[in-house]
Image 1 (cartoon, one colour):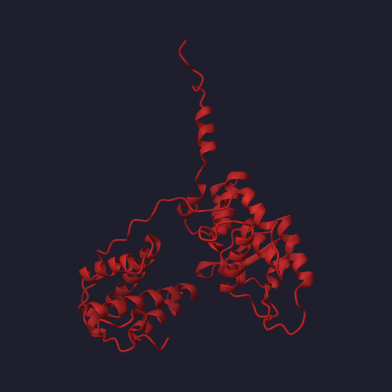
Image 2: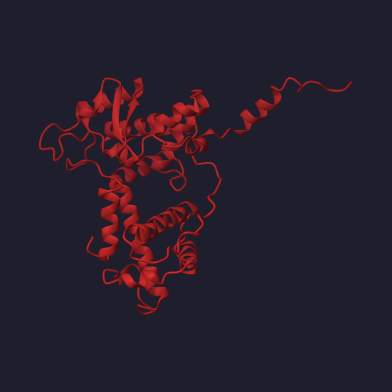
Length: 318
């Protein structure tokens, strides 16, 4: 990370060694705060007007400038990523969290600034829309239309997404020795381990893939899912193959992504499996049950049936 100033690099090291944040979380902080420093260079007229945003160098950023940052600057930045970079409310909320944590560190931990301008920075209101997901029939259509060079591997990947609700980072990090009978141990957010229980379909799909999985010259012998070059399958490769199979099944590749398959698994378990929300929270690895509650949305038929089940539903005047 030689493209950022030392005071930001020190903050990221603090998150790693003191706060114990995961590599993925630290990477998000790195991107978010580098973007923020680039914006400050524009706002404070420290770069030419015609420079490309992503080409702005912040490695020489003077730490004294951080003492000048105001709440108005922060609001202006959030407006910028909204209107100029089309960030969603969720992404903007993450950027606000990054900024608040960064300025708390600068003010309270290393005393680099006298005042914390982010104390009153509000988090953008998040959209309350229900998450997109595949219906049961669409899920079956996806699984029944897997073609290509690696059908066994891709089938096993999609089965794990649709049955277990794995995050993509969890799926690509699966090691063979972490599978024991009907259990799979994965490392989720914050490097927290959790146990996933595999159903019959997942066990079958994994075993069928293992029959044809390469046995020699493997770059990472422990990796369950391998690429054409026998490396551990990357996040980008999984995103590509999921999009490919969605398209071949005639499903909306703009609306559905790998993360939407996680939504699908959660929704199917809740709607068709009568899974308790606390059990669903544990399966998905959510720290708070409030996060899990977005999957408890009910369709119109269930709402209609709920009203009809009211014991007063047939009490009509005659």
